Length: 155
Image (cartoon, rainbow, N blue to C red; front, side):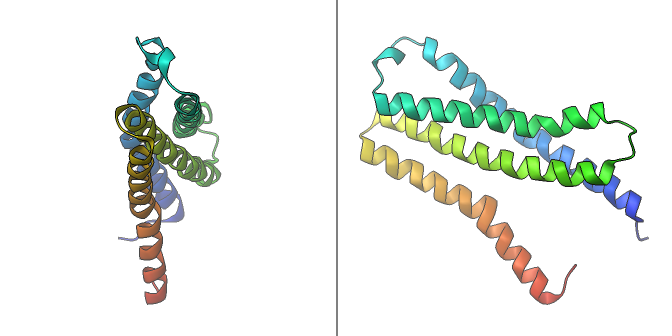
């Protein structure tokens, strides 16, 4: 049985909100880690580079948190306003940008931790591997699948 336009929008909005429920715990754990890190013994001994990486990672994680929570907050405040399709497109953009911020946060956290544990070149290499893996799995792979499907004529 085919779904009508309203059913499709409702389903897609529900799917988007469910997908965000998967990403949010990871963002929250990372943000909690970053918020407590400066209060740890030894944090004052980090280099200027590590401090800058920490700050950029903290800001990126805060942005990811705001963007990934925004759909739920707005959905609740706009409940029954008959604007679901526009919300869906807006929330989709928030989620995509939020995931980019989360990817940057993951790379920054890996860079920060590995720069403390190992040499800077090792840390940069490790963070680059994480960045490439994240970019492939989160961006390149889905876009390649999208192109492949469009060539087949799928909607």
